[in-house]
Image (cartoon, rainbow, N blue to C red; front, side, top):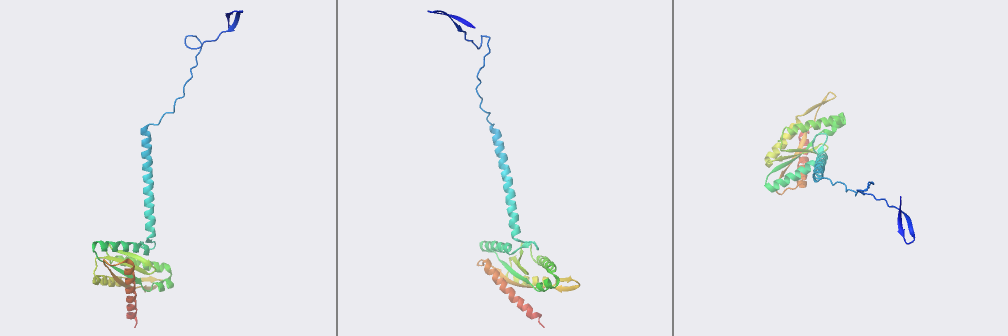
Length: 233
């Protein structure tokens, strides 16, 4: 649409500008501002954080349980389900620390099985394993639940006994030998026996684990020699 505009040179046609907006009858397009993204609610954030903490605690508890399992397996003799040398020595160190702190007493017995090698050679290691299991059962019947039986390796065992005098400990060692001596086994129609020799060391406030093991081991070899001499015709 043209609009006439008066100028010194006469009338000049000029296009009319279209008005838009309210009251003009023409559409009005308002520019809309962008809204910021909605912020998460604080309670939602807190709940997610608590859930994450619970999940991490559960994972940590499982990891610690697995560590305990691995530690126990590293300290346990798989065949006999008793402490191996590592596990027994760990328990011995703890017990000596307790004895020193509370002025308690105890005894260490090292016991070596006689004639296990001939049984292994004649009837196989499965037969030898059967003998070892029976020996552990016999030893367990002679001690208290608070005492500890461990396998130092091969045919050698150690026992940690609480609140025994030297006399009591030596009497207990004799009973342990007798319990093993009385065991009999039948393999391929043949009846065989094993036997055991035990040495004693007393645990006191001035004891250390290495010295106690060495002392009991020496006493065990002395006892083994005595038994061998007694068995000779």
